Amino acid sequence: MVITMNIELNFVKKGSGYPLILLHGNGEDYHYFDRQIDEFATHYTVYAVETRGHGKSPRGSKPFTISQFSDDLRDFMDRQQIERANILGFSDGGNIAMVFAIRYPERVNKLVLNGANATTNGLKAYFQIPTEIRYRLTLCLEPFSKKAKKEREMLELMVKNPVDSLDELANITAPTLVVAGTRDLIKSSHSRKIAESIPDSKLVFINGNHAVARLNPTVYNKTVLEFLED
Image (cartoon, rainbow, N blue to C red; front, side):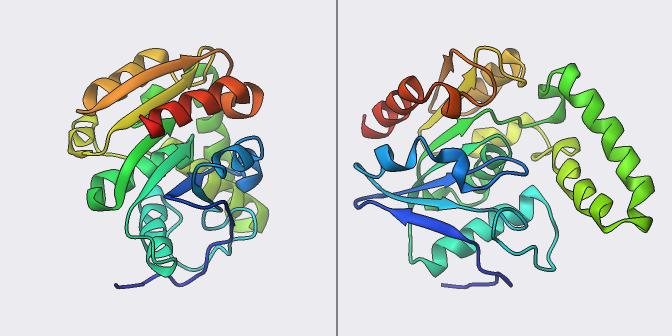
């Protein structure tokens, strides 16, 4: 076991049984999954982890990238002595889970990618264009403002591709559930392409927007648990 993380990620742990790791989205914390943790904990040992620089997890000095976050997840699992787990990631958490499953396939039992985007062109224009503009603005303001620097780092996660190409998704070996909202900010065609690119995967659209786990938890939880328990 090799642990290289220079920080300790904040997390909550609840339940018993096989490990299930939950990864929140950009700018959020583990509370995003408040409507999932208790129910999932009746079936699994749930670890709701806060990404580097999010929630109560320190920023540290390492790069603030999806790639680094996936390595942080590996190191977190090593610290917690989790050899293999089910992993559910939402939005940027889904991108982290995606990259992690490509890099460390032996550490993933089943994978749930919720509202993930493998490339930036998977985002709808009404969301991506203002994000790009705001990112460029924070680049200009960063030399004069620590707040602008922090915002730039968060936005940068959304303006750079998590993977080089969709072809990388063929390296995911875990059975995968791709979940998206019917009115998601991720293009439905992109969610379909992700599912098509992962060899053993299925795609489900749930009524709602990007935050279907929070807004439609009954259907969402049932969908995820049925997949994990199949």
